[in-house]
Amino acid sequence: MEYICYLCNKAIRTGEKFTFTKEGSVHLDCFVSDKRKKISDENVEYLRNLALILDYEMTYLIELLSLKTGDKESSRLIKSRITAIEKEGGDTTNLIYNL
Picture 1: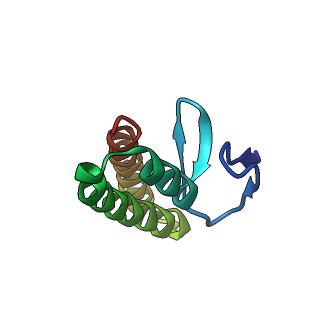
Picture 2: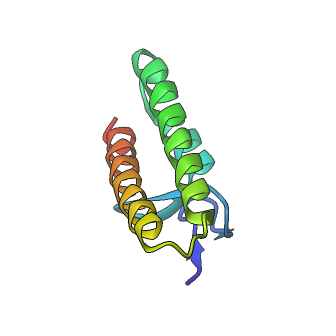
């Protein structure tokens, strides 16, 4: 499935950091840059920290998705970690979105 960033209108490629908001799929950089233009100066530091957290979460997710194993127990563990980090990333995205 191909996703298009709703801010820059470019395709999101495999391995690129992106998230989903109420408007649809969006590149991480586009999302943070757009939000930075819209928030008050007092929230800039908070946005920066949230953006770093989301970036770390996405990096971790990309690494987990690249893990391959034939071991069923390891596969279950990887899948559960992917689910957990997707939830955490969604929560962080919502914090940024609602700034």
